[in-house]
Amino acid sequence: MFELIKTDKNTKARLAKITTGHGEINTPCFMPVGTQGTVKGISPQDLKDCGAEIIISNAYHLFLRPGIEVIKETGGLHKFMGWPKAVLTDSGGYQIFSLALLRKISDKGVEFQSHIDGMKHLLTPEEVVHMQQDLGSDIIMPLDECVRYPSSFDQAEVAMKRTIEWAKRSKAAVCHVSSVMCQKEQLLFGIVQGATYDDLRKECAERIVAIGFDGYAIGGVSVGEPKNLIYNIAQIVSACLPQSSPRYLMGVGLPQDLLEAVEIGIDMFDCVVPTRYGRNGAAFTSQGKLIIRNATFARDPKPLDEQCSCYTCKHFTRAYLRHLFNSEEMLGPRLVSLHNINFYLELMRKIREALHEDRFSEFKKEFLSTYEV
Image 1: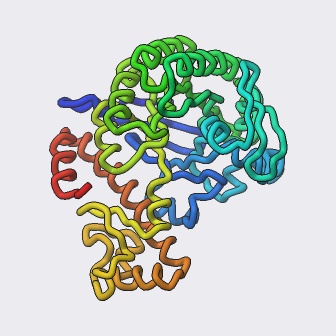
Image 2: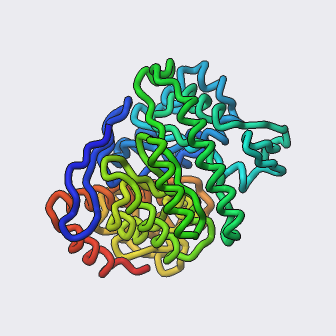
């Protein structure tokens, strides 16, 4: 399931491979976000062409629309969205706590009103696992409680303890017989919570590891806290996790964040940044972020990034892309989003290559020397 190929000689960065029912995932990896069964503006073929090996979707959103039964009837999530490779589904814990109109959290689960139509629902940890089994997810994330930043120690401790109890129930709910949808083994990850409190994070990590999961995620970050706290949390938790399992930092981040997190031993990442920024005309390049709407690009014949070989950069100029955005043509957001996804996936490929060649530290230094934050 998880093969640790090598650890960098100068850092804690790791080169590894995860085997799933829908193919291998080379890590460190970035997972494009397809919250509602689609990576916004990007086709499955685009993703394959960019080299994506896994994408992430969200069980909460799919539960509300179109409904788990609809997807199950069509043969599972992979067939439903036309994606043949691996899929990780998030439980939607963060979305429930941030989007639901009204919610009541108890040890039993979460009662909430849909942010779409106001209908009331109750989700338990067991039901969340079964939903993802029905979707045919390759990697299942359990229901957890994510607190806002800042939160008091008492609030964070209650959420942390509840996350641990829900993790136990989630593991017990997993059917070890292959899912009808997946026809392959499904992996269950544990999630470490504890807000920005070091002691709570360490306790949670130790207790989640004691339960035993196929991989481990660091949740509750990127919720408004400063960057230095994100890095601190990731470093503390990563040190508590077993070498023999994948480590996933949820919801992070910008290119420089990925490099910092890889250095401390993180294997998996997801973030909406590439497509969200792309839809708003911000492109990631080897020289840093570029805002294509700016007047300086009105007659610019260069591609977004002269070092990039993606479809967008091969075929279109900055001038044309600026024209598309200023004309409110939907092709503009699609092309810049496509470039950004390719940039992230190519960055991860280069990181893996550097790790293979024992030059990760040099690569990180070279990248950051030209990348303007």
